[in-house]
Length: 224
Ligand code: ZN
Image 1 (cartoon, rainbow, N blue to C red):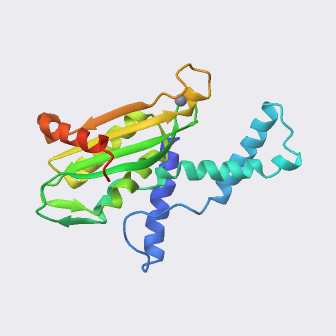
Image 2 (image 1 turned 120 degrees about the horizontal axis):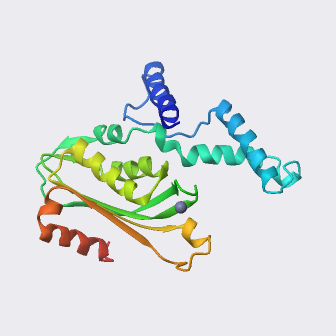
Image 3 (image 1 turned 90 degrees about the vertical axis):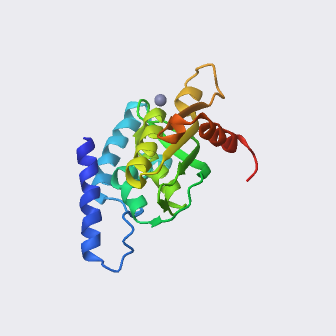
């Protein structure tokens, strides 16, 4: 199933590069077009879901709901069709800067793979360059590329870290995500307002506790 979801994206990306050579070659494209066949198939399933929960899919308010949900689900999972490493590669520059680069308070919206309910919050991503930096706007796009899939917060955190480490090859990467999970909050579990925090580090952030503490201090500070 995963492979089925992944391959059309790879193909459509290659196809669009072949067809439209004027398009910006930045290694990814935003998915705002929907596959009409997939919308049709998903809509039929959602019509069935409406019946199963005791609704009447023919009443006025629900007439277009299966199609809307089908499109919305495609958007919320469009990360399968995005190449996060390609996003980074499209804007990497040689630079001798060797201090910490931190992008904090990146909005994260994802779907938990156990309940397909949203979890959302903030990601803080830092790296220490080793000869290369990346355009700052690309970091939130990498976060989004992994978040717009069915996820667990722990894997999301690791995937962002690994992608930056393997592509940019910096001295170290640090990722912290704080998120609220609707599957906990809406399903009657007691800790209604709990926030889950996950973290993942590589390189100097693992080896040098002062670097890690500086990162933690920076993301905790309200100065920005
Ligand atoms: Zn869940």
